[in-house]
Image (cartoon, rainbow, N blue to C red; front, top):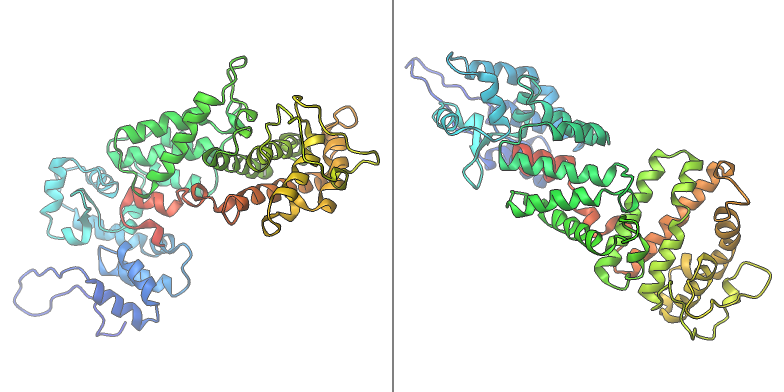
Length: 461
């Protein structure tokens, strides 16, 4: 590296004094990064997660030059052995358990006597830093990851949990988070957020749409009541906890003791309930489409189009599907009806089944919505008419077909239809798509969870 760049912490001369250089400043690092053609904005983000020996900063620049993906992980791979030697040299004195001390430093949960020891260390500025609350933590997430991967004292469980989440192995992530020592508030925050993610992603037999809303309600309330440092994840936890309380109080059927989706679809005109419905159905759809065989997939989501139509009826047509209105507008409903006979309006006060919803809802939405707001997938007769045969006669008629009769093409077509309709619901509510709901965008990432554990601004990289 050119000699004018600030990456050497050495003192030369014959005075025999021990000299310790100060850590790199932001200005020095950004200048060095710029000389390697790293963009200014990225350089500033890299500085935030840097720290420790200058080799960490150099490695961040080197790996960034090869792309922004997995910068932290690639930096750890590059520096692991060197940082191990640095740690062994730095904590070479006898008289304490070095591995336990380092693990506590990596997770930011030093005991008071350990904080006093580390804060007086000659290389404190290279080993550690203090957050806004005065908590001492590792100087960089890179150093934290190297420490925890040394695999001593069981502290590596947090790193293993992150790996399990990254590979969508939610069962393993849950098992790991459930059996760790939550000795510090930020560790309780981490484990609580993992618990909520697992509740969303893993199938639950009794939860609404396979989501364990009971666990979300209990865990979320504990995190919020105890004023745990959730950082940027607090609004996400608050939203899910609020929805879990709604389901607990208002969606559980007295006769079964289980939540029922139609108790909420009739309330889809309420904006918060509408967003809850879109979110829950979208999460459910994405989960089953990734894990189920095509026949099982059809069985799992065959009722989803009807639930979507029930919600659209309440939100945009003013209709409670459990109580068909007495006077529907005089419209050409046959345009949306896929059978050869004329469509017959549902009897006033009766429950509207899929056959009626599939005609009445698109017809009324086409009538009530301004042309520019009409979703083609829901308001175009040529798209709706074929569904009478596909959804009602074929998929919803168990006497005509067993689920084993359905093909992979049937499953893909049904998933595609549900996705389009959920996206239409989201667009009508002012969002770009179901995936762009605020609660979806706020879902904790692996990087932000890493930041919660190790400090730094994990979302930056």
